[in-house]
Length: 194
Length: 307
Image (cartoon, rainbow over the protein chains, first blue to last red):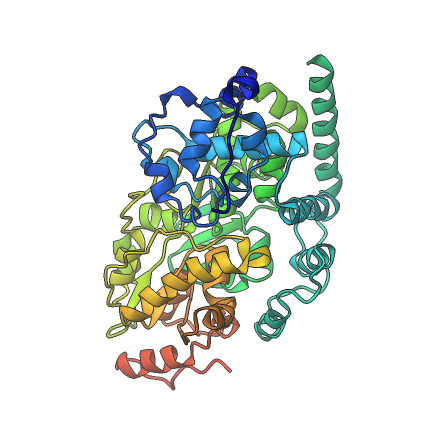
């Protein structure tokens, strides 16, 4: 057994967590009756620590810490098979997305590589207005400490002349960074209010 | 110069077609010329924000992709077409946030551009099926892909989730099947047509892509497919560019061509394979092209070479 964890439900139950997930995702968590369709449909159950139906149950039990630090929420590829097959019409993918946003805010991201990739992606977007693959991927590989990751793909990419060697700057890149700035000040204002 | 196209649609290419999915863009532009539809690229378009901005905050994502929609609306368009299902999801997400009365005001404040949310975003495949029509595609076929077996791979986002995709069947889609049949190919039932390929985990978790993409490639091979037709840059990257990595992971040789549906349509329209970007594919398609040429007897010219 890789994982056997006893949860002290009474002492870790957090009702505000359930309300927050419901509000941010627009989904009603209590509708889930554990049929297991989502977990059975999920292509990633084999790599999850908690299958997605257990994630749903853990939310119902208000287990904020376990859920937000789980590997499962970050290994979800948002393929939406669960959402398509839920007999209760719960948009499970939206819930998983909400959990990722919350996990990022709480600083409990279990897969640091993924977090790093997202940060570099956003930086490329803010600076250029578009994403520059040839710059982004080697940078990410360097920062996750695997500089030669995917090196063998380079000749294939160059053969197809698929890569621009320089980023394409868009004229409106100032507009894009202004969007980022307005978003940040909106978020600060929201945090001050709450 | 005044163009004589029967209709015009706003076109959002997306970042991946500037890089690893160049052939998707090239072949899309080529076939729409034949189909008499003018593509007007959204001027100075920006990245849709993709998953990272969405994870950061859906509102940020909505504002970033909203800029593209706002520009298209300013040009007078009611519909924007994109080849990438990932971009499609972001564009649709922006319209969804706009339609949420609790979030609209924040979105418009952050976007700071006039945006009326009346524009609709569609994929190239949806536009081909619903706006152009299968009959029209069939009418333009000069060289049917007869005797060539092709399995369609839809991936996740083209038809799912049904509420936002609003296109085809989420479990048993048939749009790509019908297009392939219209261009003359033999199309076996493909059981893994909507199973996830492993998405972006090719970068950090190769075992996941090895497993998920691996079984899609194996199924295609076991069905005797000459090619897997795709409509998503990320799926194509996993199935084609990473094919050798997956061969090593699974201990099995695949050597199967993974073209975009638009490249196959273009071939049946008699467009030069080079113009359709066939030479850019990682798994060598020369075998398929030679076979195509041998089987389409009507072709009056030399076999298409791409090297």
